[in-house]
Image 1: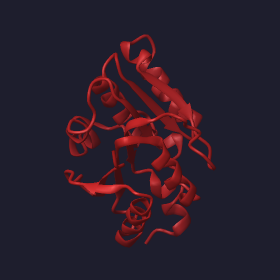
Image 2: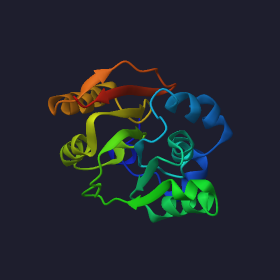
Image 3: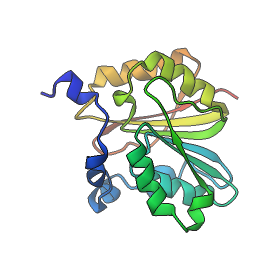
Image 4: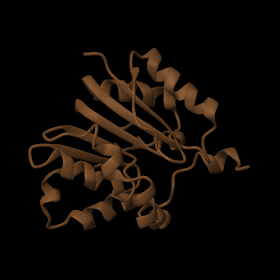
Length: 188
């Protein structure tokens, strides 16, 4: 069993390669996962974007009239994405954004937020939940995916309950292998 501090620490930049493999893209396909939710022209946020596995697919889906904010606490992860998009059309769509341990520091109204394997890593979740609620525009959705190996089922249920208390409600979504998954929507 993993110790609590190991389960809740941020995945270091040195392990970014393990997050960006063909195997992961096959098992947890960015195209399959994002297709139902990310549409052209949207403003989407990839929270805890890591090396950009889902960021790049989000950018292709929102297209040139949309925006994707790749948000991460680690400069190194943002630098990896910067290298991937440099001198490509995605460079105009993806905005790199550094968060802090205390705040997302975002003041946009997002159509869609992806939180893939990240919420369990963030301390001070009460503040985070309020920020996520504020970050979504009316009708906006957040897809939360947490790893079964790191997050206990009750811990995941508690996260969802706290977001529901703020006013978000569950919407049907597809399951993701090896993960707890929920799609929440802000009322119109």
